[in-house]
Image (cartoon, rainbow, N blue to C red; front, side, top):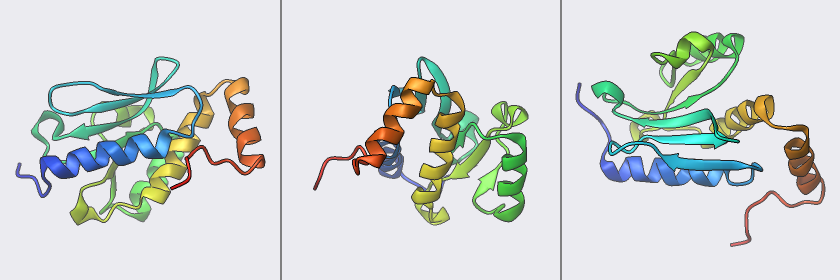
Length: 143
């Protein structure tokens, strides 16, 4: 299957993903393969990732640990942007296309990523993020 994106687009998506999850306590982003896949981890457990032409599917996509209900709703509402991914889809995860042609909504991605993080985060990590937000610090440095 051909791709509608470049390696530069994949690198931009990896960078944007890292920026979006940076405010979430105890999160790391790790490059997972020579193909450019990235995993988003909380305490060593993956809750999201970026796949780059996964098994030659031609897609540049986020995979996010949602609930089965959320997965069904997202795919039904916007099937041009969301899909049920191989493997993780059976566990309620959703795929979100992030190639430029798909016009990714990174604000929506950030909401989905935070929801996935909140379902897995410790009470301490949840309190840390909520306290930082209450203090007006979103976790990003000023421009």
